[in-house]
Amino acid sequence: MSGIFKAYDVRGLYPTELNEQIAGDVGLAFRYLLDEEDRAHGNTIIVSRDMRVHSEPLCEALIDGLLRGGLDVMDIGLATTPMNYFAVGHLKAAGGIQVTASHNPAEYNGLKFSHSEARPVSGDHGIPLLEARVQARDLPPADDAGNRTHGDVFASYGERVLSFLDPSEGKRLKVVVDAANGLGSLYRPLLERMNLELDPLYFELDGSFPNHEANPLKLENLRDLSARVREVGADLGVSFDGDADRAAFVDETGMPVGCDLSTALIAGELLKREPGQPVLYDLRSSRAVGEYILECGGIPARERVGHSFMKATLRREDGIFGGELAGHYYFRDMYYADCALLAVVEVINLLRRKGRSLSELVAPIARYAKTPEINFVVEDKQAKIQELAERFADGQIDYLDGITVQYEDWWFNVRPSNTEPYLRLVMEAANEQELAPRREELIAMLGTPTS
Image (cartoon, rainbow, N blue to C red; front, side, top):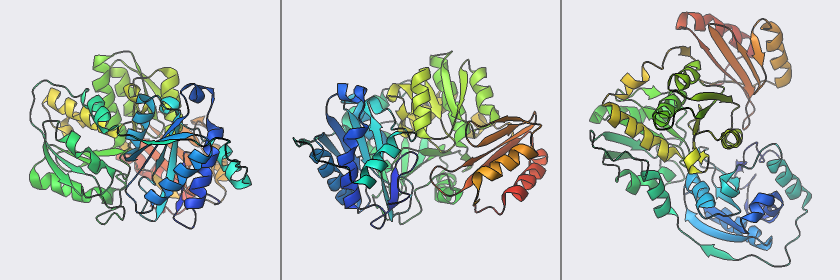
């Protein structure tokens, strides 16, 4: 069991690390995570799952545990993680659990949790409390078992997302969508209602991911999408991850667009409707993101990495939107939760409204030279962060997430991964000539990159 309780969720190899016994215990312990606000929403937990072969037995074990703990369950079956969040908010449930390992390979599985109104279960207290209960086997059943019902929120979810599609006439875009054999496949009926020439790629549900890993952050997983965009002359390419809570875009030339720059573009679209609103971005994002938000009349807000932190801050600040470099996009109007499909809608709105290519729209924001995240295996992470602080003491330093050091013409962030045994480096400079020597200097300090 050790190591499966992560900062944001539960995740591990099936069945050696995560199995039906543990899923049932988590279900039985989940009632202890419910707070006063949850209880005010009743006693029902929304449960759904992804398409992995072992998701169904894990889901059944989880539901059994929830019921034995005295909670009612609405089982919405096969659903994307954003659909689970939407169901929690839309149906005014006490909380939700999605059975999924997201973008991880087929041998993994996991559990994602939320409070009422799709509020995140914080890694600062929620997940450790759950872990302590499960490990201590402090799991007495409730005096009265809960009841199980079945529901379907697809129609309501679809109507909500499509309500943001600009109805004005524009170019009928040709869009290639790579579902990676994951839950993005469920969105096909909604994509077909967007007046697109849709070219679906890998839309057959298959939790073994036979074509490529369902992780759009890895460039190798975008190769087929990029090639198809070029082959058919598409206007846009979209790639979803396994549970469809993340999306990455490629432009009409097949070039991947950084998710931080996608965040900026979407923020600009939303701020035209509601200027003066806060917009969140994670601290790995290009400086251009905050600059562009200001230029569009918004209030930029920098936040640490992770959906639980982003959602909580977006709700607290009543921000209109937030985005992460990892391809998560959070919308006030979707209960401050992830909605990758709504991000797709807003990019389509932008392309139609502007009548210009995505590469043309991105170009003014791609102002700096930037690295992707570079991973290093470091035994003593805190000591290495202290070493960096001493070496770059003349810079502007903050510790919002790991260490960020900023200079006038370049900056870097090094942070411990919340899900893997790495220190992660991302950095940016005014141009490639400035970036290259800085990158070499930091790599020399951190060791041999693993990716």
